[in-house]
Length: 333
Image (cartoon, rainbow, N blue to C red; front, top):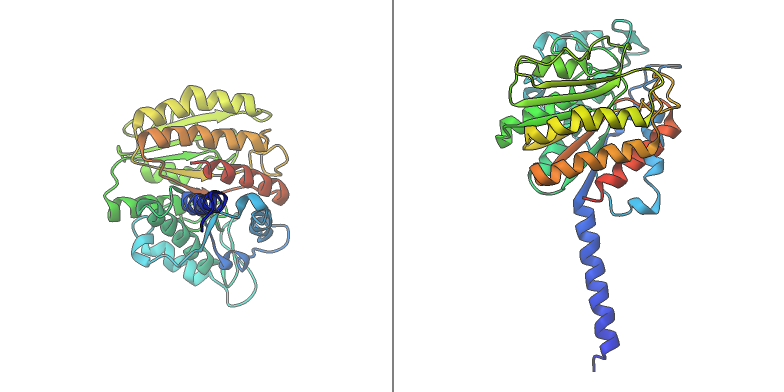
């Protein structure tokens, strides 16, 4: 005989299993083992322990329902939607068999760097596939090297391939996504993203960043060929108050008005107060807040579809806390 208590216990167990399944579906975390092999050497800011710190933080109980996936290698045709054959050839020729090989003043390759970059692009593509196919509401990709500085024919700023541009063009080619928005809150302006989409009326690129600072772009008057670029520069010493003002006055209204079908985030956490490469004073909570504000628009405009890609953040423990705040917000979708 099934008692009322037993029936209730069974119902609770069923609901808990359903809730767990639903939570697991919400957010996908993508990473790559090759990120640990790309090591530009001692003292280089973009180093493997950035990823280690994130993975360690995600061992916390609140992330038990987070789905996880290993990044595949990107297909060549996907990379070629954004980059030239000449760049790929240059990277192949510059890759050393042993040791390190500088490529300009802000890119250094080791024997595994190119394969790591191909996996970074592949991770962005896999995350896009998962979101577009309904396997996840949103996703976060923690791979390196990062991507938002890379130009069509030039690697720069620690970046070999422009991961967000590759993923965006993949979404357009495979899923016929028309209106794509890219929000970038890295402390450095994403010059490569801006340059690639400058003449694309169906892509909005919106960035908060510190200026003056590397790479020297991102002024207010840089608006794109179709008024599709929105820059909200901040000054050294600005804190969360100025960051929130920039979002509310320039970034979020334009994002909402654009009514995107899909939102990408260039999630750089080097605007954190302790980061060695920037001069802004953001805290973990600021990254949570901006994520929630973007999510509100995503819920209203594009069925919660967000793909977030790791860019900067060079103080590993602060990076881990900031990423945790970002992912916790994403998991609330």
